[in-house]
Length: 157
Image (cartoon, rainbow, N blue to C red; front, top):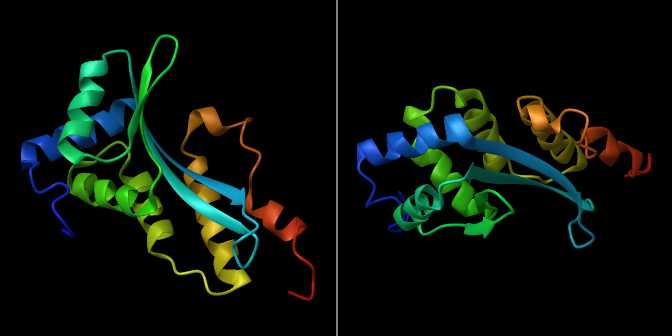
């Protein structure tokens, strides 16, 4: 484990965090246009747990000190967008995740992939597409697909 993040989490607490993700969490990947990136796109992993009980989210934050808590109308979200932080949390819950184990594995694959070519970017974008297929709310709403990268690429790239 790099740094002190998660070192304070007992095995039981890591398992509880995995259970929160399995039940009320989302492990997502977003394909975003990004002018400063070499290939003009990036793929970001985003972790989110939604709860009506704010104490549960404060517990998750206090044990990781990562992400932020955002209040909505009737619920609140604990959201982690920093890629290093996402990887840290996914590694913490990996041994204990049951319901979202495939999503954890896919998200870690995305985070581990080094993008040095357009083909690499397309591979990671396809992993993001695979990850989104597990998220019921993404179906019919998601507009960023690997095909978007192909549409914006010239044949000379």
